[in-house]
Amino acid sequence: MGIAHKPTDPLISIVDDDEDSREAVALLTRSLGFAVDTFASAAEFLTSATMLKTSCLIVDINMPRMTGVQLHRHLVTEGFIIPTVLITAYPDEAVRTRALADGVLGYLSKPCSESDLLRCLRLALQAGKTDRGQ
Image (cartoon, rainbow, N blue to C red; front, side):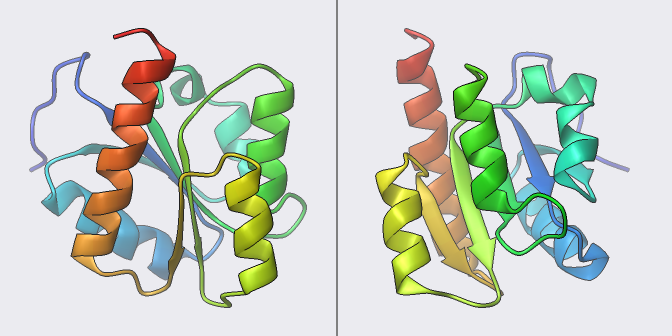
């Protein structure tokens, strides 16, 4: 049984094409007390009602059809400012540098630690409050 959340609680959306990785990050995020929704692809996330309710997006970099970086850029281009944390099993300093320059708030290697994930979530949620004028 999951933790009951109020509609005003932060919602963390996790997008990762690898089911085991997606569920591991979701389990860790839930254990930190957050409401979580998961998606197997960028397209699935983009067509969901959850997109507009998302307080923070955790997205895998290496996915077919649309990468995590491409998803972040698409959202920004369309006017959706969702604080984003990228995760990857294949860290690349050049990708990290470009992503952070593009406004991504975190870049984590898989498997990510609880403390690193919590730090990124707090940063992202604080940024989201600032963007919304709260």
